[in-house]
Length: 265
Length: 293
Image (cartoon, rainbow over all chains, first blue to last red; front, side, top):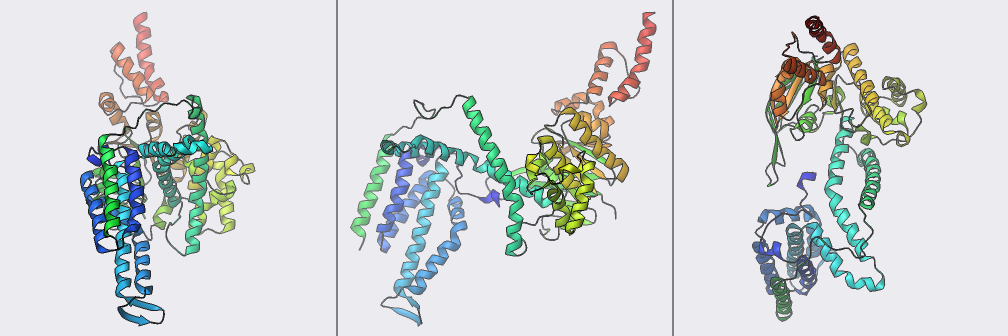
């Protein structure tokens, strides 16, 4: 189960996309997710899909990873699509049963929503697959800098994010370890009634909480022992560097947005 | 029924069929006889922990078969109906105190037995019997496990595994991080259970002294496969080979080897423990004494 999680996994590489500044990638991905809501016809979706597939191609990462990224969300997507298809009224009605209406518009809308979901997942997967989690938090810290003026603890937020990301694999290992220990004591995870399954979670959650709190305390001590005292005057090991390619990518996104405005109906 | 554990051409690959796949075990043939005390040694990353999880079907081999008593486990075995197996083979994992969760020590010890069908009262009774076994008295029964010291937590966690009355007890470095006295007490307790109740024990360890003192069978793992299997005395004879596998020899053997090297002496039997060493030193000392006169 844990082995198969693809979200948030970085795949090292040296492609065009890998080498982009994390700030450019983060801004681009967010921008893409915003402008995808401008699309409302075949042409606009086609342009967006072309853009996403070009980006995936440039990353040099196996397409399978992107399709795997959809898998955990497939039921949510299908549920939304089915709702769209069943409850959208329109001019060309194929079937009408009480509140349920299947119309041509509904089906087309369903397809559009499906494509929108898939493209959003592709772009965010592309971001996490090609960007080290730590670079991503560096980018977030940089982009949040203006909020320092309103006393937002930007450095602390970024630190919390990077610590959280750093401990995801550790926590998963820990979970597996404790699950094994409790299974060896006769617990069946994922079997029996809902009530039984919920009961089986308790012997897993409590040890996890206890070890997480202990670990947090140890980490804090270890950081203080090495002289950590917050972000004031702290220099960075990895310095972000905005290059010409990054500007080009930003321009590409602007062109994409312009195309969408031009093509939408 | 005989509770032998037999591995036949066992292999295990993590995340098989993905780009992250990695082979942890291959071509493993071994046998753990009922009533034996088997030590599994190998340096970090040799596949010990993965192997150990096959002993009660927490992992199923991706190749080959594991036979535990009369149950045969292959990659096709379903995850259901393995409970009986888990009761027969108890595992004390590394740092087992991380499995403690219940409000009181008594409840935590009774957790395993209750999962295998014991009633509330039976569970309580078992907990009362288990505590003295691991060297704690009854006053701990109503304490929260999280108020105990590290060493006490370890003992309670071990009691929780012993409480299931397993036929085979698997120990993954059970004394890591304990003080020397606690170590000795716990290891002696396991040995007593082995001798008195015929409990089969599988010990995964880095402590060659523990292997020398307790084990009657030894398996050396390296890079996911069995390099040597047999009598510890035979295997410890070849200290250079063990060192080349980044393993050591018991301190008694180390000392004996130095005596042999520096004084050109040769022991009739290689001493594995300090007792044996003292005994085997007698002829050597007598001869040295004679030479002096």
